[in-house]
Each structure stands twice: as C-alpha cells, then as structure tokens.
Length: 185
Image (tube, rainbow, N blue to C red; front, side):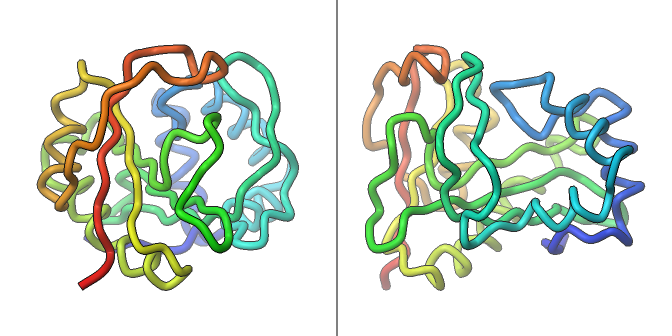
C-alpha cells in the first residue's frame, strides 16, 4: 500500500470507483456523482483542486446542504495495485481546534471491494507524518459508534477515545465518537 497525490494519470481508476458506487464522502453519498460530473467537464481542474493546502478552493457543502469555508487540506489516494480509496487531512493554521462543522482532522474511505485488508489502517499510519509536518501535535478522527470497522482502524493506528457527543446538526446531529492520535514523541 502506498499513498499517492491525486493525478490525472490515475483519474480513470478513481472514476471507475465512483461509477461502481463508491463515494469519497461518508456523510454525502451524492458526492460521488457530483465528482463524476466535474471529472467529465474538466478532469485536470478536478484533480488539481483535490489537494488544497492553502484553502483556495470554494466552500464545502455539508450534509444538510449548507456551506462553510474550506480549511487547508490535502488528499491522498490509497493505492495497492489499483485505486483502493482515499484519505484526507484538514487543519487550521496554528491550532489543533476545528470548527464544529468539521468532523475531525482526518477522513478516509476504502472502496467496498478492498475493505478488511488493513488498507485504511496502513493509510492512516502513513498520513500521520504529513499531519505532524503541518504543525499538528495531535489529530482527531471521528466515527459513529455503529461503525466497529472504523473504530478498529483508528485504535490500531494509536487512537484513544476522547469523548462521545452529538455532532453538529449540519453534519446530521448523530452520536459520534472522537478519537485522538498524538503526534509528539
């Protein structure tokens, strides 16, 4: 398994996953079709906008349809002989704090046909040095209590459960578990 920066060279594998029903957003399944539409209009611009460490892209659409300002972020594709999913990191400069409308520093999704192979855990561990490089001392990752696979991924990567809470209404107002992974030695 390796993490690769999104590129036009691999867009066909990414598009294939979207066409097979995978969505890069756990809270907005319609994002898959939206991305296919963007790829068909201008694949190069689509790929260029996936990595946005300066937050120049437009607003983020939340599950309730509202929009919020984009945070600096990077996205990496999980690759193991083919496209297997994605993992992203988002942050605010100078702080570990995130707005209530952001469900943690790291989000990931593995395509269904490659789940249960340890890819999400390997990707999460591989992304942690990049989180440290942007100045974070720890990352938060959230999941639902009804998602034991994600809980296992986070715990295997060193995550410690910090709290259980109800997410912001813009994110669905659901019971959420927040884990923390320390990036300090």
